[in-house]
Length: 326
Image (cartoon, rainbow, N blue to C red; front, side):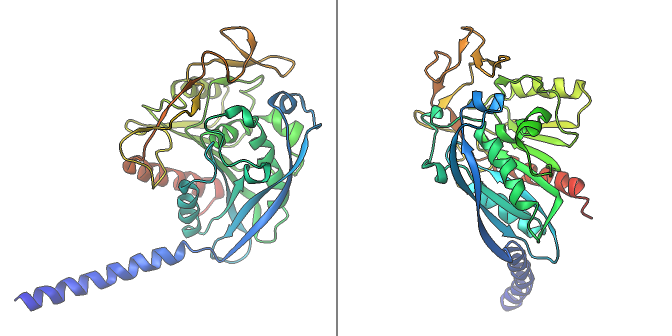
């Protein structure tokens, strides 16, 4: 009887192991390319006023071409304030397994940075939007990319860039590629800043994913923005997870919330753009700076496996719809 049980268990285990191996192989990119992207390093005021008098810089992107023939859809991934973290690798594998290529945009290394967690003033937050538009210049011309099916997805600082890259005003000033993103997928973005014309966005789906207890980038201001955009007739959805803190999709993160020591957060700031492109602290009526009293430190992060699974399924469904995949 015991031998029969072992044989039955082995017979069941072999197909399961084969399925797992098959799934792992599907996540392997058919080809990996590193692309140089000419960009600029400019202040947020320069970005907001269209001033191109900045420092020339070359950022890079890792293009992982999924298995499949012809031109494939692509998701551009933008990291957060800590740089290219494990969640970038996680999402790249998930999308590659679907037959979707990925372009992981590194906005730090070419600028001599590895992290800005503890000093956000090291790089204007809107530079990542410019980098994303410049990536379209490269991807739209690539022979293995379907230029009509490129989505933008970002995390934290990169999520903020993803969210506001949808503004038509910014496209008119900075996107010279002739292409546009098919969807915008911001994860736990910073919504503390109000930009002029921020309800005039691209006519593409925007899908925001956030956590209720997030004390790095609170979800409440994002809810307000979502309501304003819905009121303007745009296709935007915010999905909120009750136990997900910041960076909840990091597969190597701690399950218990842990403080990011000395990291800066503007969770208690309210920032608004003035007509001259100056970002103003609405409490002081003075230009905002990271030395302002509203800037705090030590926000928390965690990994929430349940939220990650749910968000992964939701993002895949959103991309299938945006890319018209069967």
